[in-house]
Image (cartoon, rainbow, N blue to C red; front, side):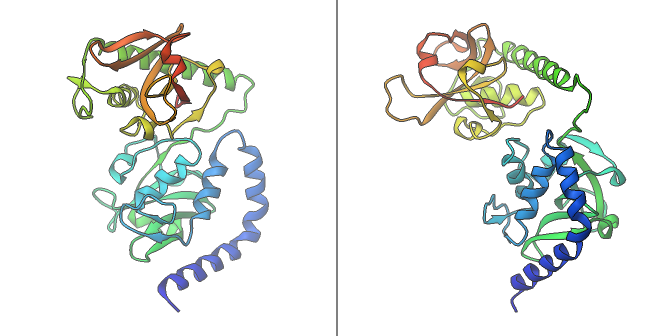
Length: 301
């Protein structure tokens, strides 16, 4: 029996032995948290058990340690960091005894220093992680790693059961959108440079501008516009809201929908973006060629 076969066989055995205990509880939990995304994260993470480990592999067949979490959250429309160091700073810190399904858990070999491996807690004292030593994505007992535990981070906030939870969430999103626009405005007039480095604010190209603005608002976006178009929730033009990202093709007459530009919807029929001679600027959107070039609109707030 190969090492990989042994991992798969032992993992199945562990899952079967706990399924009778977890079955009813998981179904109830999924029903109660259907408005959140906890159950989706758990389902996706467990579906990856048995996949191969490979350093820095991003999936879907092979995964590095951090990349397993990045991939899982990407499937539910949430963009998070792509390294253990970045993920260890994202979201909200939670204590070892207060972890919930979907939380990211971090460890080191001696329980000190910086984390060297991480996983996704799935409940029932279990977590899933991509193990270098076992060369596979595996299921482990959380309590057995208590001496190696360094910290946990919560990406998903608990869903409020109060009647006004939706309006509160909407207000939070609106406040965050206002913050994004305010941050963007401080860069008005900054020169445009194609391929500008993400580490500078002296020049921007369209996607380094959106990445910088959202980063300062506490939201991590990938570097280029095509990568950015893969995160968040797709929305239609008629449902466009302030803070949405608008992705465009090269020209109105282009036969290809290849994304070449990204802008931030600023409300009132305007976009905030950067291009050519004006650099960072406001442009009219409604009824213009900018609108006619739209390929996709994504909401990440």
